Length: 450
Image (tube, rainbow, N blue to C red; front, side, top):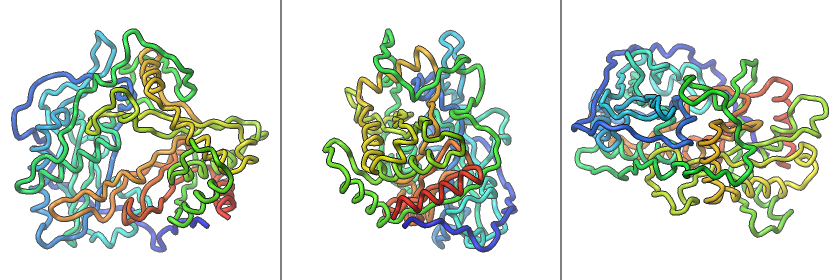
């Protein structure tokens, strides 16, 4: 059965004693064109920063001061291909849309040290609020707000953490992985850009006139025009006292769920994948753990992202740089989730992704043109499981571990890899819920694995 990830036996270090040595703006190594970049309706609603951490063990051939120089030069070089990294967001008052103004204002680069060794900061998987010190928070160190800030924090052992804060408008998971590969390539002495990014976001522009050809229960109309409020939450972020736990599914657990689904159903269109069975399992546990009367009659909707690069016609280049993901959904009454065979829940999750055809994706983009709005569901499964950030090869090697900076949110359940990365095939599931709901979730999580 799945296991509960054990919290570190030693209390986590609350203060990493980070000292900032330098904080500056850096600029592309070559002059870039001043221009404005169109942002699609998918991009428009993602005006918030995403922080990722990449931990590297010591490498005697690359002491921290060498790494700092290499990463600074690499970011300057990669900003020629990614000119928007040095730009700024602006609101086009004529259209009421956000745009990126490529004006060469610069990206942030921060150099810091900590008094601790990498092994002293403990478990890298278990969320530690002190890790926030490894990423510039709020970008308060700069007069304006760069779209990208890279912080290098050296540990006394010679290892270091690379913390990246980038506006979600810039990248989805796949385009960020390609960006990391390009950044790493430029840290070598003589490597070209690995994957030349495609910046034509007009490829995902709404049709004229818009044609909303499907109902979109996964989307919620926005009352204010986009751009009039900053950093509106994609989900309602209520302050609650939440327990949080990490649940681990081993490759054997995931294979068990797959085999269970295969034994119960025969629909040839249902894709019984690792992601689909994990999502179905988590959805059932989350829906049934809700602490309200008559929960069985409640409709539960789970959202999960689908990459549309290969689904739209003509297909987008894999190197499309921007957000090419839309929210798929599955919805059912809690009574159904409790009573039906597991295969039926996997079938609903699979059907939700299959629904994302070319026409459905274009209808969703056009819906954003007409109504403006956000994803709308009971909760979102955000998967960092197989993005492969820790497979990126830098001159000093691959990261020991790469992860998002974790926030505890009841409406977002996070899937992320074990140490060892996507190759390990196991998955960690971070859940934050009120105490009574967490107890129920934990009980159901184990019940449905036996």
